[in-house]
Image (cartoon, rainbow, N blue to C red):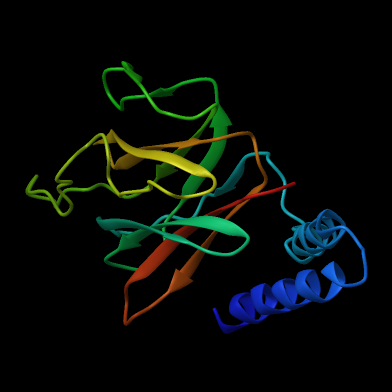
Length: 190
């Protein structure tokens, strides 16, 4: 955060300084934007990412966050990491019924986690307040909507509407304790 403020201060100083030299401010702004794009360059792609690992994890929470170069979706699991598949699709469908999940955004990522959102007894381990808006992503640069697509036969599916087909990565993190997280980062730029 401090580096962002420092960058803004530097740009303002350059604009003010260059105003006295006759160099157009647009040149400075363009240089700053080019430098920002260069520093956010990623080596990710837009093809399917998956893991076939199996576990007894249950989905317990879904959350999101904004970062300087990407938006992040985090799926919390109550045990060690499980299998997953993340891919761009023409349409996300509800588990079981196959009905269309309507999502905002020009592109859609289907996030399938090999972990149910219910216990062995059928009791929910995650119950979203609003299935159409699992997290509030208003103001995000890339995410447009995070929606529930169901939990059926040991798999939970989430639809992620994004503004364009952008590079992404998916990976798991362990902790705290025996818990783990599936993380999906979608870049702001190519």
